Structures are given as structure tokens and as C-alpha cells.
Image (cartoon, rainbow, N blue to C red; front, side, top):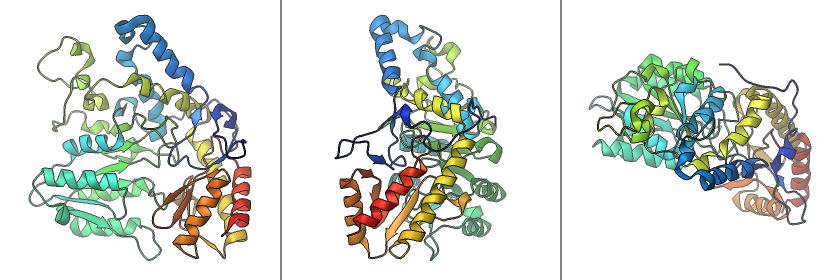
Length: 415
């Protein structure tokens, strides 16, 4: 897929002045390393939302059709901008709902269990919402979550290995209906070889869905070329669209003409006849056909300001800057604090993204104390139970100097 970019050079942090940085306790900009949880607000976001408020106030219902892009088609340019980030055709992508809602919608179509083939394979330690959704879908079909959810465990190194997934599918693929797998594991920050996983699923004849919550805007993804069946993601992390932002969904074009079931709603009806209010559902072609309700325009308006920045730089340049930055941070931690800290995230560049997950060797209590001291000094990461400090320097607004500042602060603030 084509990557759109207007920049020929880029270094981490070059677009920092295009974001609003929260202030720390000293009244100065905090050191924000939490883009893996909630990205910073682009400076132009408030103008984008206010423009839709103004359109509503000026036009009322006519805003659905006013201007070059009325609310009727407001989601389409957003899909055009999202498609290069996930390696998709524009018709394969839609911005809608929230991530877990989209998991349910996708499983309603793609999880078609039979008595012989009903298992769902996911990673042990998955984000809880994914697990909740999978178990509820299994049980909605009359099967047992305890028996039919299979969770692949990490090895002794604390990481998951693609060859273990391949081995499982070689042995039990004929009993497996669906693999739901992350692009990046939320707790460890491990990046998976998604193309390899897709090949393994195709060999076994198993449907593959990817949760890209921690991958989109972080690492390059080529969903169409890899043949992934569906993918879902949120937009409030690296895509910087704000708390509870409208999520995204990918459905491969190979499924467009499949007569698969779906949970239908009027906004998924073909655009040409939607407003004629026909009783029978005719789905829009592509991912648009999985929409249910008209999108929340004010929430959706927060996405374009960030996507414009991604389009300006390009995901490949962002990835190169990110790899250099996290490599620098990992080296500094190991050289200066290696006797006190362990980096959980794989150190190989292709197996890590923006996030490094760190453990304090003295244990959970000391780790929590360090995290709280960093927070009190205006250094914002996040804590994941039982004992992980996650820091995620995002290349749009973080720099190598930020990484040096973090390591220096950790050295001074150890309890």
C-alpha cells in the first residue's frame, strides 16, 4: 500500500510543538511517556471539533449534506487516511464504535463454530476486555468458555513465540474456529510477526482477527497483503484522538461478497438508497457495510488532526525514529540501571515498538514506589499490575532527550 508523506526527513520529537503538553507539578511541561494509554491532544483538535459545532449551529440538519464533506460521508475521508496506516484498501476500513464493540461485531460474522471446530485461540494474559468478549461469544453459541477458549502461555522468558502458535495450529487447527491475536502485547510491549501468524492461520484454514490497539500508529501493518480476515483497534492511544475516541475496523476485501451473517443497522445499508428507508437491508460494499448507527460526529472530528500528522510524516519514518529512540532508551537503562531494572520487552528492534515495559528487580513494592515518585516529578508513564512500569516515547512528540531525562530521573528517585 502507498504511504503518503510530505516530509523527507524526520527526527523523533520534531512535531512536539503541534501537540498540547500537560504541565507537571513545577508548572513546566511534564515528561509524557504514556501515548500507549492515551495520546496527547494535537493543537488543532479543538478547532476541528469547534468547526463541527459551528456547522451544527449554523445549519442544523442540513449539515448532513453541506460542504465538501457533510456528516453523511464524514467517515469516508477518515477511512482514506487510516488505510495507509494499516496497509489496507480504503473500502476495507471504517471508523466506528469502540474497540470491544467491534470485536463483538466481527465475531458475530467471523466466529462460526461447529461441534467439531469451535475453539478460539488467544494469548494468555490478553487485555481483559478481549477475553470477556471472546468468552461471551463462545457462550452465546451454546459452548463453554472454560473448554473452548484456549490461551497460549508465554515461555519462561515471559514472552510468546510465534512457533508455539504454529505448533498449536498444526496439531489442533481442525478444532479451531478463530485466532484472535494482538499486534503488540499490551503488557510486555512485544511486537508479533503478524504476517507469519496470518500464514499459519491460512495453512490451518482458521480465521484470523487481530487486535491492533497497541499497533496502529506504532508499527507498520499490511493487513490486505497479509490476508488478515479482520482487525480492530482503538484511536485514543498512538492515534491521539482523545479519551473514548471512535475506534477502527478492517474487513478484508475477499469477504465483501461472502454471505456471512452480520449484526445490521441502517448506516450499513448502501448509501444510494439509505434515505429511502427500505425495509430490506442491502449492505454497503466493504467495511462500511458493518456499520450500525450513524457516527458520533463530534467524537469523529478528533481523528483527522492526528491523521494529518501521520500523513505528513509517514508510518515508515515514524517507525525508524521510534526504533532508534527505544533502542537508545534500552541501552541507557541497561548501562546505567541494569543492576536494578529488567526490561521485559524484547530488545530486538523488530520485536518492540514505542513501549518498553520495565520491572524493578527488588519487587512489586519497590517498583510501585519508583513509579509514584516519577509521577510526582512530572514523569508520566503507567503502571500495570502486578509489577510493570510501562513507558512509551511516541516519536511524534517525544525525543531522545526525553529518554535521557527519564533515565536520569530514575537513577535519582530509586527508593
